[in-house]
Image 1 (cartoon, rainbow, N blue to C red):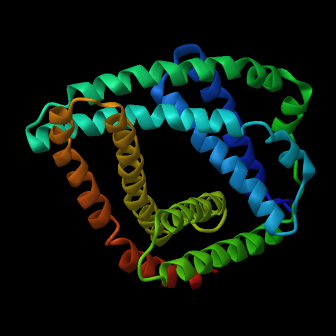
Image 2 (tube, rainbow, N blue to C red):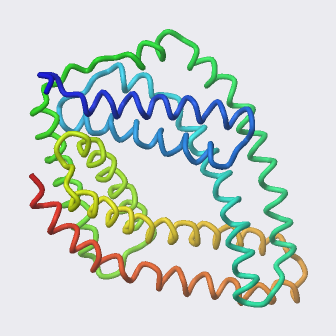
Length: 281
């Protein structure tokens, strides 16, 4: 094995490449999958920067190169949300045997507005990707010692697990706390994935990666329905027809019920993973 750590460098290069490729594809084709993938890659890059900062290994070249991407991250999230809302609404039409045509029409109007914002902001980002600063970042060699990154990764994962555990001790979690848990679980998974190429290669390591993803899925579904409920309420505020408004009561009630019930498995499932990851070496 090399005296220098390769896991950080390879994970960095992989996600720099994924971000650039998928962002360019999203600008050209406005492809839904490309938008999702460039946002995931950007989340991983931001987590790598957080990992360096909290581990005392911070490198300014990564921090400075990631500045200015917040806006296109949020716009991409808004596009994805509206697309997810459309898919969910069609599912609820089947579940509740009701047509929600006016809400689907409302969503169809919102998507092009956000697309327009996305295209307007793309020129600046594409220009940055052409600059030497970005090209040099792709070929950067962090030069960390292997054990240094491994120990830092363990501490990062343990600390984040403790942070999530403290939040989950609360009896009634609010939306902000659930959102924080969702962010923390992603950060844990990303750094865990980074080190899996080196020493965490056993079947049990893969199993717990999948169980982490299962926890994320619980919160991902929760997030989709919470944000859809907000969008539905905005739509109803603009709707003047009282009879039509009352028709949407069933959809609103169904969303609220599923949001509440959907997060029930989170605490018991997390406790199992907390115990396992705190013993990770």
